[in-house]
Length: 453
Image (cartoon, rainbow, N blue to C red):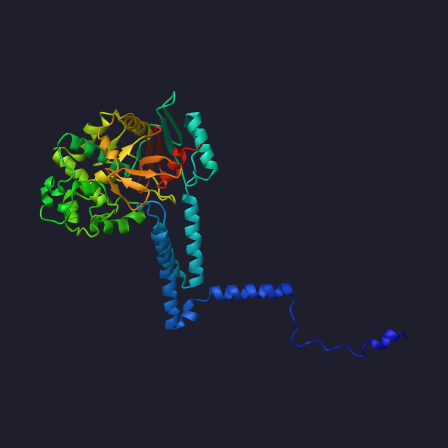
């Protein structure tokens, strides 16, 4: 017998009464345990008591509420790009799933997956078709390489240079120079031109109170605001009237138009203004609406006819109109792709109701640069804003950039469109950008307009 044989036991070693299962079985067992837990209703597990029921309620309400807060406080451009539809979708899916399953974890997983899939399906993608000037398209390609066209679908661009052999160059991706789009708050800038022209005609005075032209405001605090205060956003008016804000709270998340406020309601909303903060810059679409309606009343015209006869027709802007009564566009999309109704307006029209094309806005920009447009005094800065490098004229903002340029501009945004019009009056250049997505068109516009040595 070899020495090693003496080291072997004479009898077999007893097996443990609790053998360790193979690794594969252990993993499988854990997954089976997870599945069993998922199949157990909350009411039969952690939610049997009141504390568990409160936890379920907190989670089901807290998730969509947090999503709304991120939408409201996210710091994105514009105050009209309402993307809380995802929170509404999440709320509906969570409620339906939990009522059906009574399983919190399953419900949260279903809600998250549903919102993610729908958001992915609606996410805007840049259109494939391209047209227009090769130089402008090259500029767009460069910006696309910098990520500046992320979130766009159809975009139309005009570049104006009165010192060039070809002063106006037009191009588009998914759109062209005749594609109509809502231009949002650029309407305010157009209104500012007509207001300055009305001053030249002797129809209004900038230091007169708005009640001078809208007698229905006589006796109200808001009626004591001057035309100058209205066009410089220093009147103390709120951004919107309270009733319009209430409509927006439930209409905007569904992509519905909330700015069809009538004249009587606009008057009521204006009467309720207390003018807190009067004398300080605070952007107000309500104030611009009242200013536009006041100059229309002074000229004895409807607002739409005032803009058509005083600005659009004289400049040959044949594809530009005020969107009242019926839709002039098919409707755009929110930044996350939600289809949005056209903003067919009524009394708020001077704040954001214009529909135009880059071709027409290039005509306007040319006239502003060569001095032939009506109301050029609107471009002269008179008042400080909330930015140290920016002053304001009749709604037009005049900013000094780090490039050394002085830029006169206005951006625009509706629920489904975005726009930018910027002028470098010293260099006699301009850029116009229109988009059928309510993104930040001013970012792209400023990049195209920036002068680089």
